[in-house]
Length: 82
Image 1 (spheres, rainbow, N blue to C red):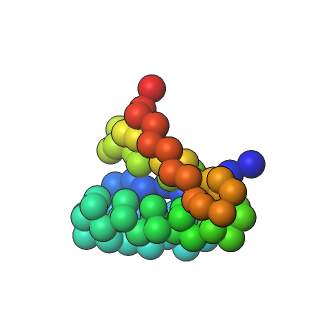
Image 2: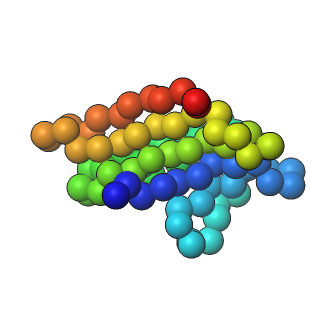
């Protein structure tokens, strides 16, 4: 099962949250998404599959990034929202 990392808007900021950990807050979606994707890559490099879900303000999924080990390299798959 993959670790899920969520990027979502909150009051005046964007948050990145992994499980029940304390969220990280960022001024922009780009900053939050970049940090979440780096975290996903780091987890995959450590052998843990990860999925970054980028959410819209209404709760809909804007997009997903899936990170998994593929031999000796991390494979990232961008999946558009359904």
